[in-house]
Image (tube, rainbow, N blue to C red; front, side, top):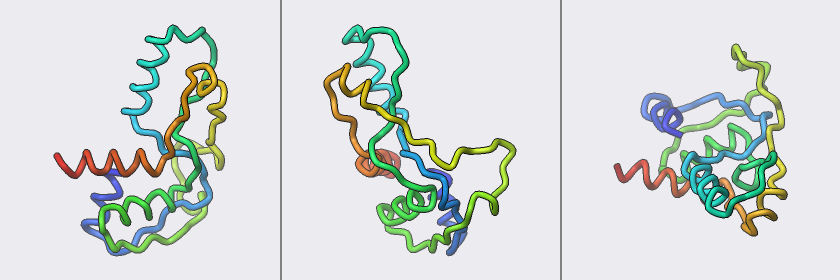
Length: 124
């Protein structure tokens, strides 16, 4: 989010990967749910934690700019056009059903978490 906002200050157009799908999950949500799991004495095991929904990096960037009132144009590109040292999966979504059931919660969607995180960041 911070990188996108910084880039929007100096560029009018960005090429962003559009074929990698996941759900942006802020550290605040991870900390809150981890604290709840500890307080609830959640049985040991493997649990997946992520905000609900799905988005590509391109759609995530577009939503950041929309919420921040930026007019930066976002062009979709494939992963193959943006090489990185670490290979990223095209689909990094997680099934959070086990965690939600164990804690009797419904995790929030990535859009609401982005809006909250962006508002907190911009208020500083």
